[in-house]
Image 1 (tube, rainbow, N blue to C red):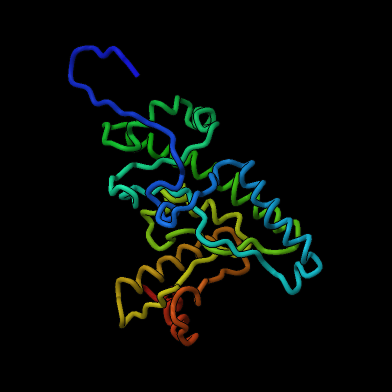
Image 2: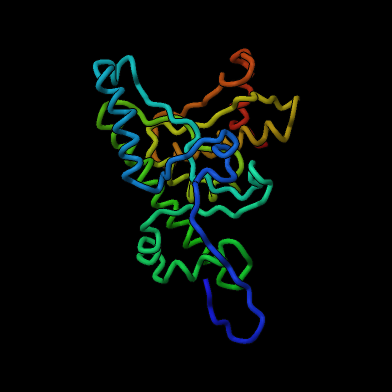
Length: 255
């Protein structure tokens, strides 16, 4: 790559495409991850999973089987050290038609926004970041979650489960673009409380769990959902139901 640069002081940004698993927990597990911004990839996922469920157990849909659970789907775009070489790479979600989609929504070329996504470039940076992540949130919510949610609704079951890291609001953008917009298409929005941290054991950890549940219940209120759900008894030692009730009841009083 060669370019002629006028005299002066310049900052040069280089953007490349790469595997979506880099610097994520998919990287840690040494597995690949689907691009949830690609509607055709999500449609293929539905074909090999949900359509198989319906073919094998469709008679139980809506009665014995009331929902399909999804566990932590995300954009896989946090900025963190790679599990492979320890280097930190800013990850940005991408799909082939993103430049066209961004232009249509924001009214200016995507290339003008890219530097603002990884560096402080002045007064326009905030608006450009909002334009970018707003576009990403809309694409993720419609191409992934609405597509799955519509399939579930048309087959008499709920699209349920929970998104990744709903506890910390700073993760909502880089992992989902717009987490509340994604939850719009869940029949039963959900969260998890796997560690079941009590207020006495760890006040800050307890607060995070209750915040995660609060965001989800807020989505249910906003979109008029009849239920929410919580993943509880996974990967940790079994605990009495009262422990989980203690964690989730934190939503009933100020923290």
